[in-house]
Every structure is written in structure tokens, then in C-alpha cells.
Image 1 (cartoon, rainbow, N blue to C red):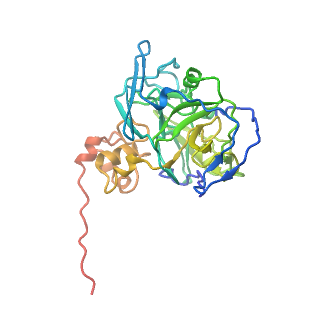
Image 2 (cartoon, rainbow, N blue to C red):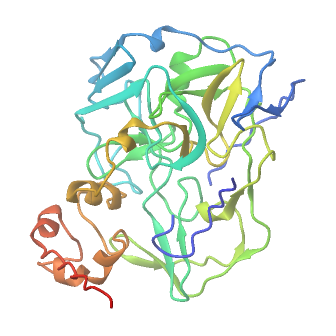
Image 3 (spheres, rainbow, N blue to C red):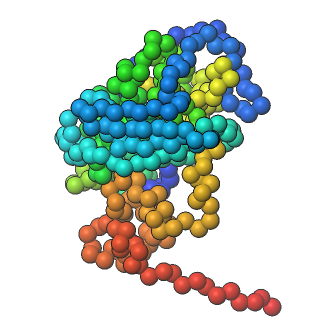
Length: 364
């Protein structure tokens, strides 16, 4: 399977860090599940109490995360406040203030690897209850039809990221776009692989201090196209997108199998254990999962209005802009936006008239 992050419409879906490659002798192979495997790696994996019940509480920062295991379910109840120092918020690039969230997450204790990449907006949660959300809601739109999703790590648009590669959503939710620096420093047990979180399919998330496991994504060859392109927040500014692919946008990258050590979800099997790695190179944090995700299984059938709204609300500000809406809703945007403020709220969506179902006649 090849995933190429090339966005050709608005609905499709850097401060880059240099790291030194430390190559080691390893058997690089694919097992029957087609996942990258390093079965005889001479490496140390940090094993700690975070695979069992634990509580992380910091009165200074106000953080409180409690994790308990019952049967095959790991349950995390958290206020999602970081238990470490952060940058100053609000700041010039991020006008939001960190506030407590009431979150409950469940993860399978015995995850099931299915070997099929499933795209997911929030791939997992750090051990301290702060979520990982690698993509951004920022989109550059061109009059010639191209649309480019802005990456968190770039030099074009200031997103106000702090030294933990994190910032704050309008709801007050602090979240990581890349390697959670302070978490890594706190949990560093002196070995290369530091356990930093759990993915929603139950597999653990690690960070390699040596950076020895390389991403299999690479920059595209050639140049971008697009004329009269703009980016809009509280104001609209012109953005020049033409030029060589440099990592500013997610569509600048493509997955090339075996280009690096990791699969398309930034995963790898080490000593018989499948895991995801947070890397200093794209995709930084996985944009997809290789395991069975229980949350998705519970949402089979026609999605509710709440589920539709949550899926489209990419910046979690509890309202939908014209950039966020998809499908038939986009064609009815002005009708649903009752107060003409340029946004659709959940209340406006609930009050919108339902489309009439077409009656099917019998064919002769």
C-alpha cells in the first residue's frame, strides 16, 4: 500500500529537526503481516510501570491523569493538562489559553494488528493525558484550484508552537504535533527507546533518542503549482506556493516502502513488539494506525449529527468554517448559516431542514 499525501482539493486530506543517523547491524525484513521488523535489534526498550495502573498528578501544573486496567481494557481518565512547563499562551501565533479538559480514553491491553493503514486525526495520547494531533487545520487555497494543508513545522505561518512542539486549540486543549520534549526528558530511563504514550489501537508509542529508526516518507521531486493563493485567519494574506517541495505542506511528502525503517504509520516491530515511533522527521507523529481501533467499530452505520460535526471540526473550535465543511453540506452552507457569520454551529446544523428522500419507482 502506498499513501501519498497529495491534496488536490480542499476536502482531501518546518521547523525540521536534524538528527544524526546511528546505523546498526540488523535483519531488515517483512513478516507475514507486512510490517517492518527488527527482531534481533541490539536495543533497549524502556519498560516501566506505565503498562499497568498508574496515576500522574502534579499540583503545581494542575494535571491529573489516572489509568486503570480491567480485563482487556486500559482506561485513562484525565483533565489533559500537561504535567510540565509549557511555552507562554496566548502568544503571537496562538491566541488560545490552556484549560482543563474532561477526557476518558480506552485502549485495548492486547492490541490486534491488522496490517491495513487507517487514517486517523488523533492517533493517540501521551502518558500524561495530552493528545497527539500531528496535522493542522490551516489550509492555503489557490484560485487555480489547488489546496495545501499546512504542516505544523514550517517557516511560512506562525502557529505559536512551544518547545514541546505543542500549542493550544480554541477549546483550550493543549496538544502535541511532534516529539513531546518535556515528556521525553521526564520519562528518560537511560535507554534509547522512551515510552511516551499509547495509540488508540492499543499499541505503545515510543521515541528513539538516537533517531536510528528512519521514516519512509520522502519529499516529492519537482515543484508545486498554484497561483493567487491565500491563507485566512482573522485576515487574508497572500501565500506563494510555487517552488520545490520543501515540507511546508503535507502534500510535499510521499510514502516510499522500504525507503526507511518505519512503515506508513511510523510503526515498526522490535523484539517481537509492534510500536509506533514519534520521529523528528515527517510524519513526526503517525497519521494512521495499523491496529484494530475499537472506537471506529462502535460507529458503524449512519453517523449521527454529532459525529459528522466532530469529524469536520478540524480545529475543534465548535463551529464549522467554509474550509471545513464537506459534501452536500458545502452546497447548503449559506442556508444553514442562519446568522450569516461565516460559520455553522451545531445548533444551526441541528435546525437545518433534512433533505427529502427520493422515492424509488419500479422500472418496467
